[in-house]
Amino acid sequence: MSWPLNEEERLLQATAREFAERELAPGAAERDERERFDRSIFGRMAELGLTAAPFPEGVGGAGFSYLGWTLVMEEIARADMASAVTLSVHILSQFPVVTWGTDEQRRRWLGPMLSGERLGAFALTEPSAGSDAAALRTRATRLDAAGVELGLDAPLEQVAGYRLDGTKIWISNAPYAEHYLVFATLDPARGPKGITAFLVEAGTPGFRFGRKERKMGIRACPAAELIFEGATVPASNRLGAEGQGYRIALSALGEGRISIAAACVGLARSALEQAAAYVQQRRAFGRPLSEQQGLRFMLAEMAREVEAARALTRQAAAAKDRGEPLAEVSSLAKWTASDAAMRVTTDAVQLFGASGYAVETGIERLMRDAKGAQIYEGTNQIHRLIVAEQLLKRTAPG
Image 1 (tube, one colour):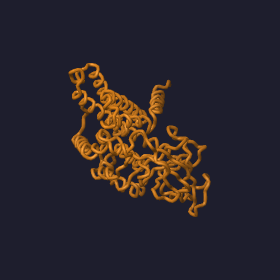
Image 2 (cartoon, rainbow, N blue to C red):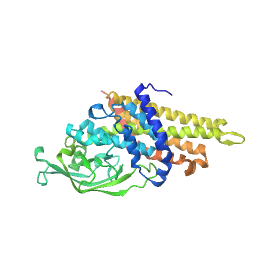
Image 3 (cartoon, rainbow, N blue to C red):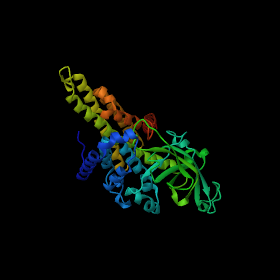
Image 4 (cartoon, one colour):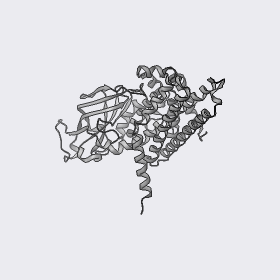
């Protein structure tokens, strides 16, 4: 199925596809098996300008539409979902700085991230605050110029910095990232209104890495625990105002979910294409598997899943390009596309039979990767709640 793309978007799509097939696909299985993060791959994506693609030229970005960005994510994930997630999280950690950052923060923070010199991470999840982000417990304590603790009633102009204490888990791109967007609360009793965002660099005293997560899928994209034990950041590293962190996180996640939805489309498309080729080559009972009506129906249903997910994802991207609210449409896209990826990759394993269950073909890797996408950036159960809430708001009597 076609979608109206301009010449610039078609060129971006072709560039990403050629790069992914040449640079990513050949080593994807090996990197997954060894759980190996290859920083040079990120560097090569940066050389192509992919680390700056969806950002406006005014901040140093490449100026592509967000629809164009979904084309990139689909092609990268079709070859290697782990590389797609690494890139998506890097982009996710920049959007809040573009939207909420001061001119000084953009100059200092974005330059090396747009160029790919530094890798970014988005640090929200905690042991007791996953889908319920408002329940996070990492503390931010106000400090004056002498490092003395200040109460929340002290004037803001007296605040020279903040001390961070707490733990984050499942932080993608850690421990290799250099830049971390960290969310902490000034007062847990305030709920979402206490959450504040901070720009934190690796190597900050009091900030260290804990265990590396061992994962079922997307294993070549690292994830690790972050531990803050009195890590101090200057007030100039606070992103937005005190108490705006929850709003910042939700706005960024709306953009990130569209990116992940596009990656899921690419993952599902890879499974569909490989399964369609396999059933034409494999013979049983004296004829190709592709001549069996039941298997043809499976392929048709898989194609329907991919096309429906792609259409909804691109609709969400177009909504972002128009500056429309993203909560509902981004949740619909991420939920639909990740569920589609799970169904399509599972069916691909079935069509491959024992070969699909074997590691050698790489089909089982696609299924493992799809499972992760149903969980991160908000579980699909949470997205059902978001969609229902938006629907009920829209249709409330009066």
